[in-house]
Image 1: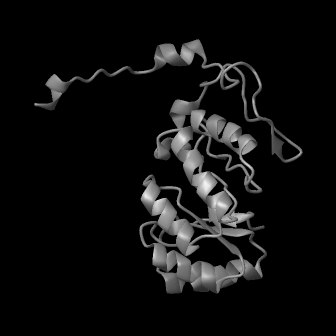
Image 2 (image 1 turned 60 degrees about the vertical axis):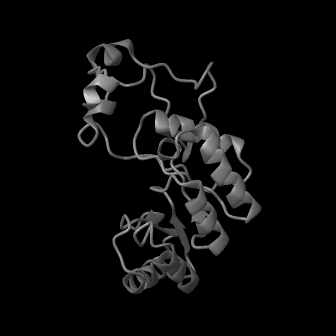
Length: 194
């Protein structure tokens, strides 16, 4: 069974992405994420224009001018800003608001089970153009060993296909003190720069 979306992580030319996209359409895949290198916006637009399935993109982009260009060109059908790559919620909200004005949904990129996904849950609950999905990582501690035991209580419990937004004070999560005690701390200064 195919997943509801599929991503080659920007690995195709527009022509090849269209060929693969046709196969995905035939299998009922819901959206095709970042088919072309993210900085080649015109190629992604060619793919989006050629396919009937939604093309999503932007997960690696952080520049507001690039986002506006992507939205103005309608290069994607779904915007995917990453709260951390964007530098926080305020800049991410600027992208989601520009997308909302253009009638585009937002399914943010959230690559692991850390604060990026916690922030993404809160973002999705706050915007009018939230997409259909939360990108919830299936990679566990084998893939991201640092995320094991990060939170005191797991905020990502899936019930009937849904994850609830944590509603405790702050972000609704508590970092596990033992995780913090094991963490490596680095300090840098201007003196370290030569």
